[in-house]
Length: 428
Ligand code: PMP
Image (cartoon, rainbow, N blue to C red; front, side):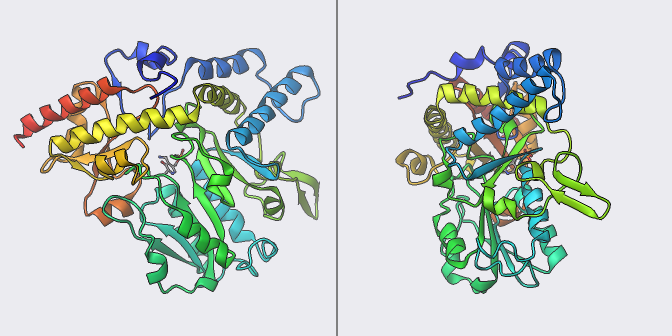
């Protein structure tokens, strides 16, 4: 039972609902809605102290700098990160992973003290291990890195329910001494599966490889901690957890980041600039060239406060109950559920966040999306930036309904009514 009432009880915190009466929003995996406290924090910055940070000596600049840096601390608190962890502000998960990939391309042997397989930088036939379930953000940057260095990307296959084939490790032939990077999402944006990363983390640790987690769909849906992730780097976006667009985080160990080359060059990331060359600032500033997303960070601070007040355990429980309710109805109607079954979710055999991929036989997902839109239900249809997963499942696209704290059973009922209408129109 939830101790904090969500669904309709929090809808009044989100101006979206008043401005869009009658809309059932089931696309929070793409981006979440924003509560007034976030919008107000951004408006307050832009209207009252809209000045640049770090370099100013006047009071307003000091205030802006303090507010910005306080959010960095709030992020680390939210992650329950120990002291040695640093949070870098980026534009989002995508930029966080690109930052990491570009910096790792520039590494020579500076990482050897931390990762035994990194006695040199990336070389021909080195292995970057990802999975078929990855969002293109955690896939294309690694393919591009492989193209530039001669390394190869190896893909962990997925099972029918979207979970990762853990047996792949014992069956696969790639040479473990060439394994340099393991980069996996903790929670799928398509199936909602919370992956069992333990065997892959152990594989990385055993071989002195880097272990990175794309936490874009993990951190917004459940209580997570640095210890639980137990990763070298994690990446996520603010906009999926009630915060603004254009802001993300890459978090990692300060000592490791201290030996890593920068991503972009420019203001703020330098220590000393001379004609002969430049020395770089300490992390996180080394990786934050130019004026950062100040308003976005301040807005994100308000989002974290809001989520902390609710408690991430309550968020997870609320979504779990709603997900189980939705899956049971999809199955009852004989529609295809691409992720774990309602039984698996209810029994706890598989952990799943509220991203539900489904289909109706003989009806294209885009038609499902369009008809639902006419009934006021907003879902997403397509490959969800996961073309490898679609190829593995042998489908071009799925329909996806995704849930967050402001949804409730009425929204699911409206979705199911809409699907009945689709069925009627297509006589399926
Ligand atoms: N990874 C996952 C699992 C995602 O769901 C998303 C966004 N859908 C991303 C990465 C990319 O996030 P962003 O577009 O905010 O950079």
